[in-house]
Length: 248
Image (cartoon, helix red, strand yellow):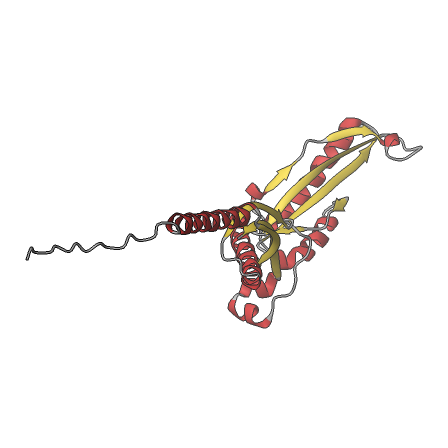
């Protein structure tokens, strides 16, 4: 009997659905990537733009008062008017020095002389005038100084203008406080809108006048810690900082 050989034939797997399944998954993956890119582009190109204004102020004692004094005199001649003005100016400067104003803090303008008729209709002769500007550290007694200047022959004393030393340093502190206030505001806005990435795109500053004709009374705590504040009052420097942010 001859031997019989049997060959096992494996069934051929069906290949018909594989290309279709592979192509479908590939298309879905590409659509997913495109959707992610579109969302990211929309997120990057359409940020939320917010502008906030921060306020910062620094309160310090007034350290100086600037007084501008006008001295004038009349005479039949221009030379006589100028001589009389010089004599009154010397009396005014003596009062200033006697009140504690340093000579280096006193400045004097040139004398001007003109016909008195230019000032008052029908007036005769000549009038001469000059201005004396003085800076005093005795802020609390500047009212008494003004009265003394009038007694010495001043024609007009303008309201004293108060100021502080180290103006730039104080403004920098006020700016820092204003920026801190603005950052605090934008942090709250970003958290409320679920925006955790931000970028500053614009910053503008506004400063209060660095001089004033009045001060506010210091509070009890400030007075107890600073004798100068108790005497001269409190001078306030305020900064307003507007900052525009882009939020993502």
